[in-house]
Each structure stands twice: as structure tokens, then as C-alpha cells.
Length: 219
Image (tube, rainbow, N blue to C red):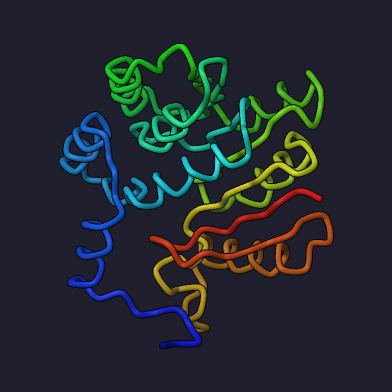
């Protein structure tokens, strides 16, 4: 028994996946191909993708945001979890990575659910806000850390009351707890963590899955 989160050893992690992960072949193949990229550490873990898909289903979500696509794993997890009339608005500015993402969305049969906006995410979010607030059920933020706060504020306007914002990398490999580490990304994540903790606009939970996932439910 324990009154705090377990330390996950490699052996325990592999056991956890063996009894819980239900990863479709297309997602596994996407992970395998992405692993060859020098930035592969940017991809979310399979158990996190499955967890977010479960959250989307529990919300009954139909309209979702994916801010930071990379090679498309998170968008694909969410797209697979959405009903036939569901939609993912995916934001990224890298054509090479998103071309790979689109290939796997097509392979998985969910390309019609995912609408890619290629360009600065701020411009996309501003245009979406111009069409009306409170129009999304779920948002996932996993992009440039320096702009996390800005993305969070846009999402708070775009998400409906009762909707959920999920923010990746909030534990940042443990750097956020090390006072000697003060690079721009770490400082930005620390500041956002403190802000969300005290934000009366949301109900929160920080889940120690993968690199830390903050969940903020809009009140």
C-alpha cells in the first residue's frame, strides 16, 4: 500500500502496458516510424494517448483542439475516439511532420475527422475565437512551451463550460522541481503550473503520466 504515487520502474512500466494498453496497429506503426526521427522524444506515450482517448469518450466530445501535432499520434488517438461526426482541429507549423501525420490519419480512416491548420497556432486560435467562444469540448496543448500560457488562455475561451483542457510536459522531466534549472521553457512551465493551481476558472488535477499531464476542467 502507498499514500503517494508509485515510482515506476522499467519492469513495472512494461507490466502496466502488458495489462492495460490496447494500441491499434496503425498507432503502433506511427510510433515505430516516428522513433527514427531525431525529435522522437516529442511524441506522447501510448498509455497517455489511450488515456486521452478515454477522456474524450467520457466527455462525449465532438469538437476538439490539438495544439502541436508533430507526427500526429495525439490527433490520431483523439480522432479514433471521436464519433463519426466528431472533429479535431489540429494546429502545427511543420509541413514535413504533418505530412507524415496526414498519411497515418488516412491509413486509420479518420482523415475526414481531422482538419489541419498549418501555420502559427496563435493565428488559428484567434480565427476560431472569431467564430464564437465555448465551441469545443476538449483541447490538448503540446507545443512550444514559451507560449503555453497564451494557448491556455485561448483554450479557456474556446472550450465550453464543463469541457477539458489537457496540457502536456508539465513535469518537464523533473526540471520544474529543481530550483537550479531556470531556462526559458522550464520557467514558463513552472509559472503556468502555479497559475493553473490558483485559477478559479477551472477544476484541476495533475496526473503523473508520461512527462506530466495537467487536466483543467472549465467551470
